[in-house]
Structures are given as C-alpha cells and as structure tokens.
Length: 184
Image 1 (tube, one colour):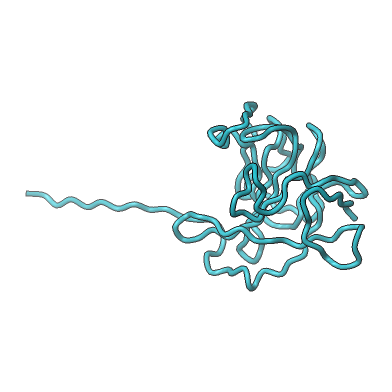
Image 2 (cartoon, rainbow, N blue to C red):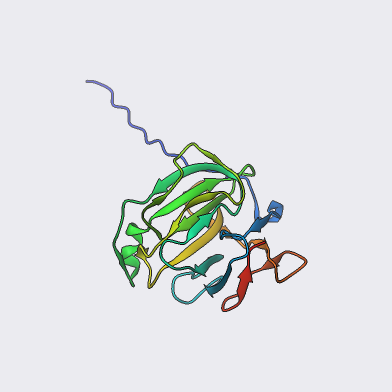
C-alpha cells in the first residue's frame, strides 16, 4: 500500500499586512497634464462599483493613460476586444496592474485592444504613459476604471479611497462623481 500526498499552492500579490489606516499616499490623475475629465462613476457607484472605492474617468477611445503612482507592473492583459453591459463580460476587461512599494496595487481597466505600452516586470514612474483607454469588458462606453486595493490572504480585495492632486484644489482631494478634474 502506497502513500498519497496532495497540496495546493497559491499566492496573492502585494502585502496582505498593509492596512487602509497606513495608506495615505496622494496620487496623480492617470491622465495627460492639463487635461480635464469628468468622473462619471465614483466610489460605491450604482452601475458596477458596489462596495468598492473605484473611479471611472470619462475618456475617449485611445486617450493616454498614465501611472497615477510609480511601481512595478505585475500584470498586463490587452488581448480582448469584446464588451457588454453585464457582469459576465468582466472576464474581457483589458487591464494593467501596478504594485506599489507599500504593498498596495493599482488597477487600470477597460484599456483598448493592444493598448499597453508596458510589460510585466517593468518599473514605471508617476505620470509615465502605460497604455490607452478603451471600451473592453464590463463597460458601457470608453473610459478608464481606476482603483487601488490591498489583496487579502484569501484573494479578496479591500479597496482604498484615494486622494489626488488636482488643479482645482490647493490640497489633495477625494474625487466625486459628476465633477470635472484637471491633472497638474
């Protein structure tokens, strides 16, 4: 009679010990300098941001997307061209994920097909071009979905409310739905 041994291995990106209480970084808008864009879905939005501190920037197809914070590119997917208005299409979301030095991650979603100019393993700086906006996945029009999160050990996410430097305020602000902001 033989013995049998089985095991599963998994990993999560980032630092699972990072907490929202220690997260106080101020982000740059993920847009070109001096460009104005409206937030058409804000934190805990009704269409797809349920219980998530995520933002949707209204962008045209093919507009530049820049890193809101420097870090290491850990994931790039831009092979999809499909979109629809239901959650089932989330599997077609084109995205770039960047790991920050505090263990948080930023996700840039709905990029156009082939819309990345970075590769996994590359270091990027704040304001650096990383890709181009699109209308892929669970989307009802061209835009950029942006969120910062901490991965939990079980693979779930804790989304973080993020402050930004904007031309409209001398101090960093939380962005609000239906308001327009300009990148410095």
